[in-house]
Image 1 (cartoon, rainbow, N blue to C red):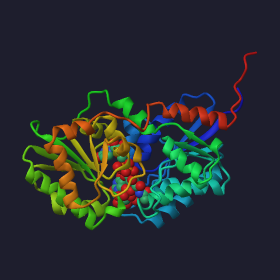
Image 2: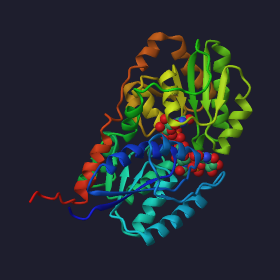
Image 3: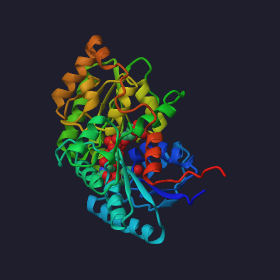
Image 4: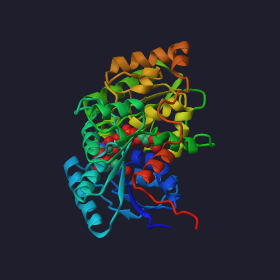
Length: 375
Ligand code: UD1
Ligand code: UDP
């Protein structure tokens, strides 16, 4: 056997951990790979719960999260922390996932050390660097710094080809979020929160920076309008711990008998909540990918999306963060069984559950792993 290839896999936030978990598990089965898992811990509690749900231990933990951290101080801490790691240890490749500050800063730190980067979930674009903020710029920068681009869909691949990336560097793999979902969704899962059984459940999440302030207020007011209008619904809203989210949501929605506000749910309970939900209102990227696969209509609380496939399929609808528009679009689905059925079709444009296997194969080839021949 030739020497193993040293792969550093990095996670920072909840969605990165969920989407990287199947890749880590697949890589750990490879004889040719020596896998090191590094957590920047841009998120602390939300990252830890995912890693433990998938039974993954972290080898290096930078423990960087601070309350209400700013983008710049977080970026600086990640760059410095990563450079110390790279000074002490050698790697043949670094894998990053998505569009967070962790992804952008880790890719830059690896680039400075001339270590090739593989970018998972590459090529998502809205074309507007301010929406989503700062994710659109993070993924553009991460792309420039990467050698391998693992695009989840053909349209993500096309975005990269249009930007001039060579055909041979861009691989359509599907999104690993579906790999993760498929390992858990068929299990009996418990939401772990007491909810009325006789009501239609509306699941709500919101955390995008561009929605902070007035847009999030409108989202919350729309949620209140909906529970007043429909006595047969109940809202479950796991509140993102970003203080900018908590303060607004608590102020407008706490204390209503038809609204349950909780801390973020762990991944398995959250999948249980999506399965139980009648309708999902969310500005999350991952939820836009998962809920359609579970046949749950999603109203996206944003004006644009880098995930056009499910919108084109008609199973996700963009409604923005306007109070009246949210109420109108949700009412259309709550009132009209036909309109609802047209969106609740169980279409999964983001993957078939085999994305991680494809990523591992491409990486193996890209690192020119020599397969030992029998004597
Ligand atoms: C980050 C990502 C965003 C991603 C989201 C997923 C950036 C700039 N933003 O946004 O792209 O969609 O994660 O959830 O990379 N906090 C906790 N505990 C946690 C996590 C967060 O208390 O486990 C609080 C802390 O006060 C922290 C704040 O939330 O400072 C913000 O965390 P941060 O990662 O900077 O931004 P998010 O809004 O979570
Ligand atoms: N999620 C979770 N608990 C919650 C809300 C979301 O486990 O209370 C999961 C969800 O299943 C999805 C991921 O978190 O896989 C999405 O993360 P988030 O919305 O924080 O970030 P984004 O995808 O928008 O970057």
